[in-house]
Length: 158
Image (tube, rainbow, N blue to C red; front, side, top):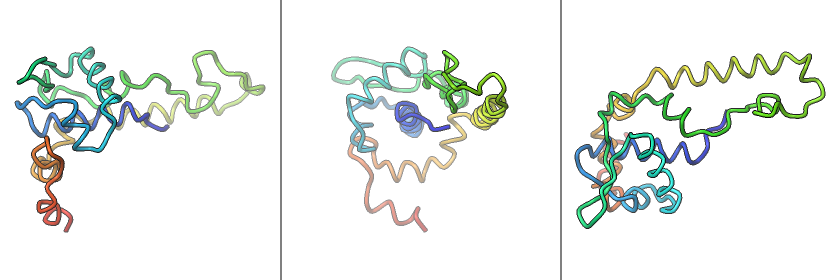
């Protein structure tokens, strides 16, 4: 299974917000820090807001921040809600695909089992687990508004 960029960006945004908990950041801050598309991240932030994982405040002192504690954000749940298609093989598509051997093929069951195991691993982690090395992440992210601090990088790369 391959995670979409949308889900990857959502996880990065959540990590960013967890590291800088309590401080709202703009989508532009996150985009600049990670070197990602602001437009794409706007969609990600919108979806995370709909999922009630982030707060969004408009205006000069506004921005986005976590709506719930990082310990309450399950990574498997985020992935399930962000991804639209989990069909690792054609026969797992919503419409069943058009594979000729699908009625007799065992690949569908094996692929479904593999997908279940993949998601089960993510289910065992929360956002808090992803940011346990908060100091190292903060150094790599810089102040979260201007990108990483080049001086901070070497001490965490050894």
